[in-house]
Length: 298
Image 1 (spheres, helix red, strand yellow):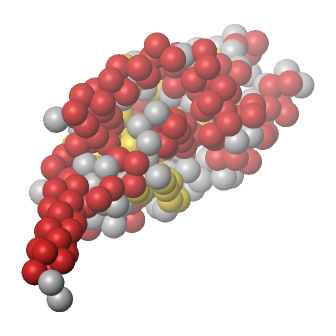
Image 2 (cartoon, rainbow, N blue to C red):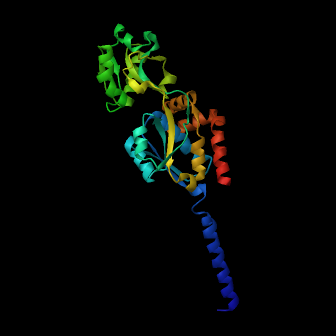
Image 3 (tube, helix red, strand yellow):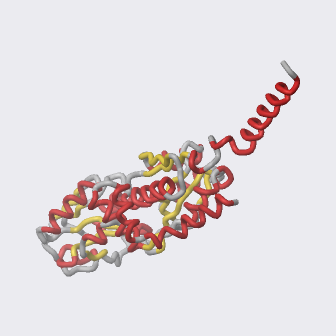
């Protein structure tokens, strides 16, 4: 082989090697080729914020795929801690303190993204005219519509609340979806009933109701305001600063997250609903996008 052909071949190979080492020739480290896995547990605010995150990372920041994977509460902490998932955006503190402590050192806790005051209590439609648990027996309500029996509030109602207030109503356990369907039916018919309510949630946009005061403190810590945080795997900030800065900057007020949830519930599709909400709230998310773009530029 002539000498100049050998030198030319060597130059080509050297150029290819430099390309691979410097930038992966466009195959690995650019956001356009990145993938993320975000865990979620099916709670409405979790579905809403994670779907909005997916939409913006893919649509605005060029991520190839942001996968949202359904799991349970204990597993999502473990999987973010193990690095199987990149983030989980619905950590309620202090409620989830035990789960967070179990993965201490393996995850990073970001600041609270929720700019509002969480609520969690028994509630009554406004047309019933009551504002305290100790008034429930004075109404014609026959049932307390609850949620999943393993939830913390459902564990306290029969053992603490019923006894403290000598409540006479039947406690109904149901999946959250079933509870909401029953609330819709009873509220539309303007029947008297009590139900488990919380915020953030789209129910706060849809219905007029009162969170009932708990003068005897039977619900304990559950009625105290919580912060809603994101956890990410410990090395996300160094391996993917774009996604890290984006999720660190996410902030939503109570009104914003409740309306986002309501649009998603109305459309029946998290991504389509997020897109519809985004059309009216571009100014809310632009700072998140700008922070991510600054991280991309280094």
